[in-house]
Image (cartoon, rainbow, N blue to C red):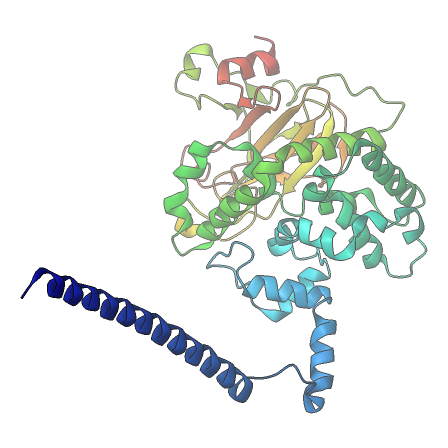
Length: 420
C-alpha cells in the first residue's frame, strides 16, 4: 500500500470517529430529553396538583387557623422536639400542655416549664403590648396574675430595658397597694419553686455530686432530678433573679424602717458558740450552732426560737419535711432531703443569701420582707443527717455572697455571727 492510500485510510478513520462521537452526544441529549419528559408526565398524572379540594376546604381552613393558635404552636413545638425533653417529665401530656399555656402557676412542680417557654410566650402573646395598669379592671384574678407572669418571669425580664422594668414594678405596686393582688403572689411568680434558688447558687461540683442519686427511684431522686433540670434552665439567667429581688425589695419595703442592721440569731444562753478548734471538724463552708436545750416531739426535736440575722426577702420557707436517715427513707417536704425544713433569706443591702437549715418549723413565708431580729422559726433536727443519732440539736447556717459568687468559710461565718 502506497503512502497516499495510507493517508486516505487514516483520514477516513478520523471521520468515522468524529461521526461516532457526534452520534453518542445526540443519543445522550435524546435520552435526557426522554427522561425529563417522563418525569413531567409522571408529575402531571400521579401527583396532587394545586387545584382546590372542595371536599377538604373546611379542614384546611381550620388547620390554617390553628397555625396561629398558641396552644397549637406550643403543642407542635413540643412534639417536634423544639425544646429539651427529660424522660421523667411527660411533656406530651395534653392536659399539662393546656394548663401550662394558660400559665397555671398553682402547680409548683411544673411551673418552671413556663420559664423555659419565656421566649415563645413573648413571641405568641406579644407581651410588650400588655398594659398592667389597665389589666386590673378584668374580673378574673388569674388573668391578672398571668399577665404579670408574662413580664416578671426571669427570662422575659432579662430582655426588658430599664425603663420597661421600672414601669412593670410601678404598675404591679399599684395593684398591690389597691389590694387587687398580694405581694406574696408576685414572689410565687418570680420563684414558683424554692429549689430554683438552690439551682442558681450551688456549684457545678455539687451538681456533679448528686448525679448518681438523681437517677435512682425514690422521692429523693425526684428532688435532685428537679434540681438538675432547674439548673439547666435558670443558671444562665440567674442575674435576672437578683435584679427581680432588688426591684421587689425597693418597691415593697417599708419606708420608715432601717434595713441595714444586724441581730442575734439566737437568744442568750440558748446556744454554745463553736470553738475555733471545733471548726476544723465542721463543714468548711457552713457553721453548726448547737443548742443548750431542746424538747422532743417523737423523733423530732424542738429547739429554741431562731431570728433573722439580717433584713431581706424570704425567698424560701419550707416545712413538712418527712423522712429518716437515708435517701430511700425520705418522703417529701423541706428545703431538700438533707437540709430539712428551713428558710433562705436574700439580703439586698449586702447581696447575701443566708440559709437556715434543720429547723423544726418556720414561721415566715415566701415573699415576706423582714428586718433583722424578726423571728423566722424554731430550731430542730429535720434533714437526713440531722436525724441520725447524735447529729441533731443544732442550726446549720450558710451564707452565699453573690458579689464573689462563693460561700463564706466557717471561720468567717463565726466572725460575722458572733463577732469572734
